Image (cartoon, rainbow, N blue to C red; front, side):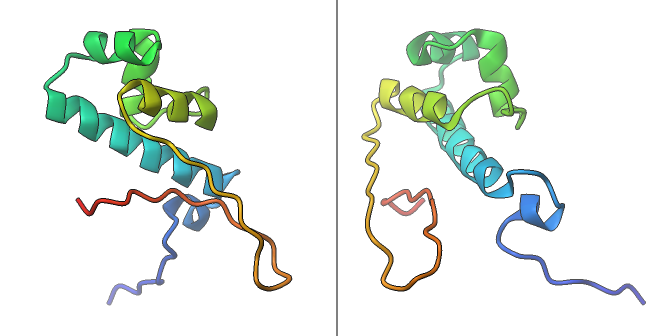
Amino acid sequence: MIEFEPGSTNVYADLDVPNADEMLRKAQLATEIGRIIQARRWTRQQAAAAMGLPQPQLSDLLRGRFRGISETQLLNGLARLGCDVEIVVAPRRDATAGRIAVFFPDAR
């Protein structure tokens, strides 16, 4: 019989990857970038030009290799693709550490 261990909502944390929360956010942003590119039926060259990235870097990003790309670059890329990017800073209601999360308001 195979035993299973329940995972969290962050596969990077489950795999003990350094900076797991950051990696999850980057993956979420990269997924949205890929969705936009696919919906527009753009080539990677077209998308890279629109985002202001070299095409090889965009290809790496879309393949899940985004360690050399900052969250800021991803957010700027989304803005250049026509997305509104808003950062909201709000105090916690309790004494615990705050969190950083990515939300996409329209359900997909």
